[in-house]
Image (cartoon, rainbow, N blue to C red; front, top):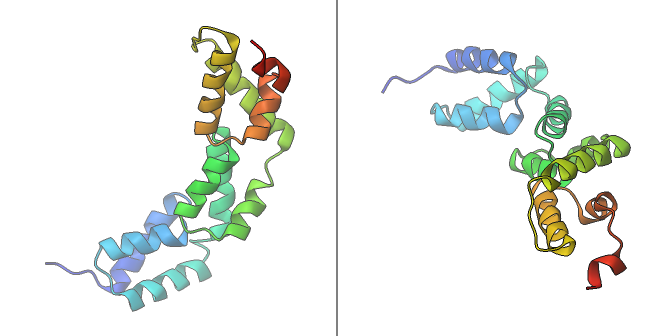
Length: 159
């Protein structure tokens, strides 16, 4: 098997980091797949961080922005994605709390409104249940969903 030197790995992975934002965990995983020794991975990652190729805070802000604006994910799903990327929880929540609440609720309202057109139910209660499950699956919290579906608790439980 043709093994890569530490210098070759550094060159390849710095090119990889130059094309898009990547976090420390993604870069380490890629280097492991290439068969680079753990000590060498640590040295490479430290150098990439020193040279600003990798910055977990910058990655976190970009991830939160992209998943919210383009994928229309809620905070819970974005938080889970950051957890999977091994981003520290305090950094994740700092970036997630940077999302403007009015804009967040506007995105959720739009998602629910467009989904409402395709959701069928025998009554409004069943239809709202389906909309709630949809919004939960997108990572939005129940408190936010309730204020966007505009159904009072009394109305939802009276038949």
